[in-house]
Length: 202
Image (cartoon, rainbow, N blue to C red):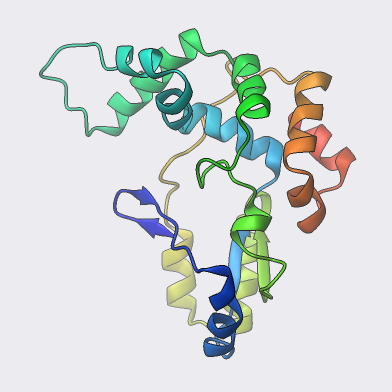
């Protein structure tokens, strides 16, 4: 769920999930999902600080080095910190770390299919991030949302756009195999075929 300080997760105990679903049965259930290769790459460019804080604390602390009068709440300062961490933690090292430490320690890394409790909950719409605009239009149409609502939502910019294309996220067959294994449930649950996913990561 989006919050003022970023994404947060509200955990519903497993034994309460059926009752929760019954209580809101009349609601429209939807979520946006993302192809795992793209998600891992985005995490490297936008959420590496969470990885570094947990597994490379010295690198994380060193990323704060700089003039004391810097506005550290500024998004640009956060980008600078991520770039500093990437000098020490390369993309290959990052993916190897995910394999070694797992992906259950933070909601940004955890499999989406598990977070959405697809084993217990039924969603009316699962919108692919890669086709977000079309997915939202379909959702709005199914809800009969006024055109004004649709246009206002479609004008929203992305809060944390992924920054890639600079050679720091070079995929290799070995790295792709690691991500395929880590996020196997997501690939299957959201219908991302292996060929499609590999083409996106190539």
